[in-house]
Amino acid sequence: MEINELFWLICGIVGILFELLISGFVLIFFGIGALVTAACTYFISDITTTWQVIIFIAVSCGTLAFFRKSFKQILFSRKAPKERDELAEEFQGKTAVVLEDFVAQQGKVELNGSSWKATANENFAKGDVVFIQKRDNLTLIVTKNKED
Image (cartoon, rainbow, N blue to C red):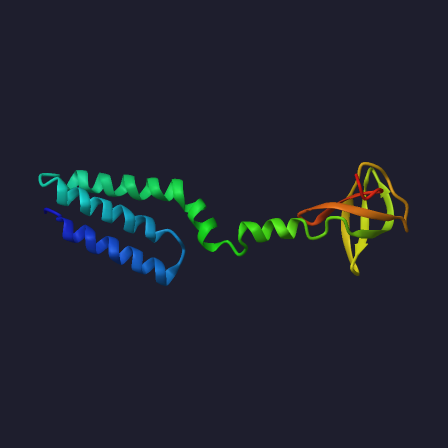
């Protein structure tokens, strides 16, 4: 049975359309594989079905392996890179109060009524006022002096 370019074209379009409905971000790569195979079949008139299937599998799996993570990050990221930078700097320079004595340069501080894990280059006592250098995920990096 000979498969022609129209079959691959339809498979590619259907794969991409199903991706819009299902949104697992996998089918689009098989759609791309089918479209590339359709183009190869159109431009190379004597390509065998075996080679068509090989091209489809190689392109589909290759694009899936190399581009899925980066495309997913770009398309489905909740915050733009600039917003992420602003959030990282949101606490910088603010003051917090130490809730418990630091042990091994780690402890808890209070900021705006919330308790945060904190790390520092020195130990602090309960009640000390510290300055926030930056936030690292859910941990604040604090220092005794604002300039540090």
